[in-house]
Image (cartoon, rainbow over all chains, first blue to last red; front, side):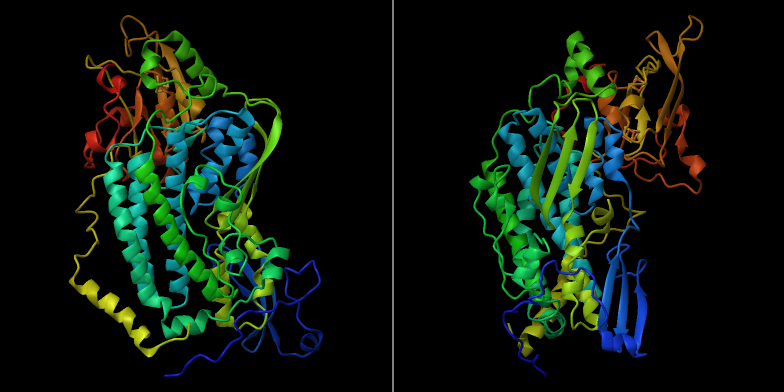
Length: 420
Length: 165
Ligand code: SF4
Ligand code: SF4
């Protein structure tokens, strides 16, 4: 059995002067030859993770030029949110990135709460953390399943989606919907956590580490997997920083940076978890980071479950939060507040904020400007997928066509988030 | 990590063990997994016990809808045509299911618990026009019932308003 050739352990970096080009240009001597073939890869290709279009220049099997073209999934969510009241805009946020819906919802809600300077009960904070981590596992599972599928490991896909469905069931249990839950509301959670959730979640926490063991047994040391991922798509630490990478792509390049630990939000400073970092900067390193993150997320979920505080799940602020249901039948004042929030929406003080969270894909930021009215004046998301795409050209140096699939997959871009 | 010949075989053990496990596949159209009680499916309009409609045509649900898919046209109740207990009733109540995002805001907004999101999720149609649900369709009992998991366990204790109203 052939052993993979020895590859340099740590990639030294391109030392290209900044700014690093996000388009790979064809070399002059190759361009003048007649051997370069330009091919459209996507936008409707099964392995482009949606509708990414890559214009690839091929010299034989070598990728010599590359440009990523985005915009095929432009949904205008940011603009649409400006037309809706703050309350309604919450339903738009999760749909931007349909794999890390909970992180999107969280970042928008946190931004609005920061503008309002509203106090969130600790039960809501912990529950938000729990669900965000479940969502991280969900997103990584979809990534692992599809990325492995693209490299030919089809059984991986079934195994990952088996666990993914359990997570979606949990979301359905607690929030009523499998995706796009709108469970995080300004001020806390939409409803209290049902009693049956804890048992179901405990079962999942028990199953998940074993499932990760299975995934690792399937591909971790598998020769084909190693051949296809090790030393492929190299991104040095310097380049990763210069390109503004974040999340698993950055941590796969040896930079120890995680917003959950660097700038703790929610209750991340009170739970115990490790931030996996790998130095190699290749596809395999990114894969390893995500695998370990799944394990760490399970730990956080477990801790959050154990230490979940009781008490109210939403702030008692009648100007912003919908009054409790039963009061609608008894209190005129509550009914008036209810009417006001539903029809006109609550008003948010003038100002602008930028809030970041660590989404499964990296630094997810939300910049919100309020003019004091019932609708956002401007909403802008800093999408980690979009930034990750800028690294495609750098990763794609000396790549073969087949590697291209592995590289694009390893950056874990969600096109809904790229185009927004 | 360098590949080890034996490690490549380890993966086969995982798939082989799977042979002895119970399949997780569900035979979908025959078997319907019970949805959790909070599941937000097709909408339903409700009536009081005495047959009058709960909806009074206040359009609050339409105002709350982020997808703007509810259309309510209200009309006065008259003594010989009493449809709802209040002053007015909804003469037209339509939901465009092809726009609806099942956020449940209409349910939250309605002060009279007249509209709720039910458990039915089999709502595909061959034509978009059929996806505009009229008041009669929303008031009728669903034809196919979807089983629901234990309400006491998986929902908050029955809220006050579900018992009374
Ligand atoms: S569920 Fe949401 S989108 Fe659908 S009708 Fe109700 S408010 Fe509108
Ligand atoms: S369903 Fe409820 S909110 Fe909508 S019009 Fe009828 S009473 Fe008003």
